[in-house]
Amino acid sequence: VANAVFDGVDCTMLSGETANGANPAVAVATMAAIAANAEVGCDGDMTYKNVWNNTPKPITALEAVASSAVKACLDMGACAMVVFAQTMLPAALLSKYKPPVPIVVVTTNHRVAAQCNVVSSLVPMYLPEMGTSDETLPMVLNTIRKLGIAALETGDLESDQVVIMESIGTNPMIGIDWEDRTPIFKVKVVGDELASLIKPTGYEGDHTISFCSTKIGLENIVTTGDTVRKTKIVCTMGPKCWDEESMGKLIDAGMGVARFNFSHGDHEGHQEVLDRFRKVCEEKKAHCAVLLDTKGPEIRT
Image (cartoon, rainbow, N blue to C red):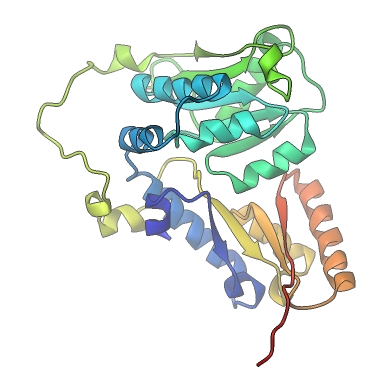
């Protein structure tokens, strides 16, 4: 799991552990803890350079803004990113450059909120209706606090800078018409700017920069991290988690995507499980995604 995180995956998946395992929720919580701790060892600057250098040029204006926003996040040590998105494209472009902080995706689209659960770093924030950027931003900042991403308080010696990507105008949403409505990024400083707390320095030779996992020891993996996990978890549904109580425990433990394996069972049975799952998601106000793994052709020899 840790090596997959170092390689930059969006999701990791549990199969038999949740479908038929003895403790499905414990398996999810363990994978979530490993992923969160492994993310601490990822080098944001090196990852950004690796993605940028391997991206075909020229890029679109939207990707240019997204990549610049992530670069600004790295350079100033921002604590979070926010994107106002009516489609997945702007959020996915931010995630592509692997920022070291969560990306809160503010959207009025249920499907976008659900799809955030299969892309690294994205945290959905669904709103039934959207006001202007200035009207919505206080709610977004409050969500960042509630999720434990950052306290956004003056005097706690932590970064309180939030990088925001939006469209110019009264409607900040970036949609399919982004070419007609200029996308921009801006920075909101709620408390302290990190540059005022830490003296900016260059490389002084007191640490080693490496893109390899050699920086990571066992302590990094087993010690509880204090960051918000960005790698998503896919759980295969099975007899051990078909009831509503078990589904709720999986969501609480960190499941973002429910996988239905159509190689087993029938459509009617899966529909019943799906209906229960959606009911639990609604009760918990969780925007979980659903993955249907369709049955392929069977070839006997």
